[in-house]
Length: 114
Length: 112
Image (cartoon, rainbow over all chains, first blue to last red; front, side, top):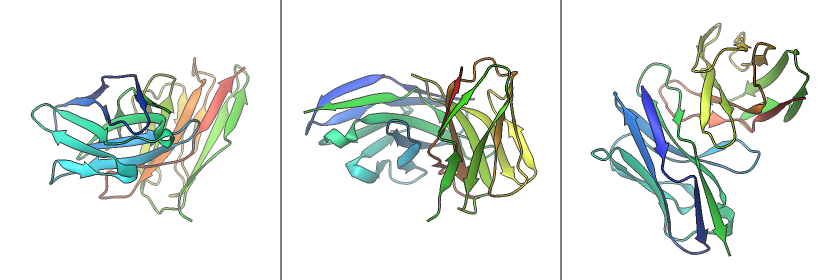
């Protein structure tokens, strides 16, 4: 079984400030890790993914995340946010085999203020 | 332009009615998934299908049914047995050998 915990339900931040959205996971098997973004009333768009290799992964829109196996974390970061980054962000995991469905965290609402 | 389409965008249902949500993809993906999203919660898996004519229950399948007669299509029926169907429904697909899922724009279902 897998579970994902997003530690902050809302993160307010001022424009051009750095931000970190936290994600921890639990799994009895090895997993792939993902961050998705959702704008209001839309589907999900993939920001970045960790499959293997370098633990620092870069994604779209200037986002990056670092996989920490010992802490079972996959925190998302951006050095300078824009108003347009205001959205809901979801961390998710999937197993290597089997149904490969995504198990999601409950989401973090990033609110960028001018 | 390849992608996933879902229709309708908004759907209203009276209690006791069955409704069907459409999901079509032209990405030539083998696997397709249905997720349900409720406010303040992440997405939860309803059903999935990894090949045509085969599908499996997810974590919250009660009150839902699906079919997979064509590779491109994976419709979801919300039956009257689903006690609280008001939610945002998202369809996704994935190709064999890859774990990344692509999502459709969603259907918002409201029970009147």
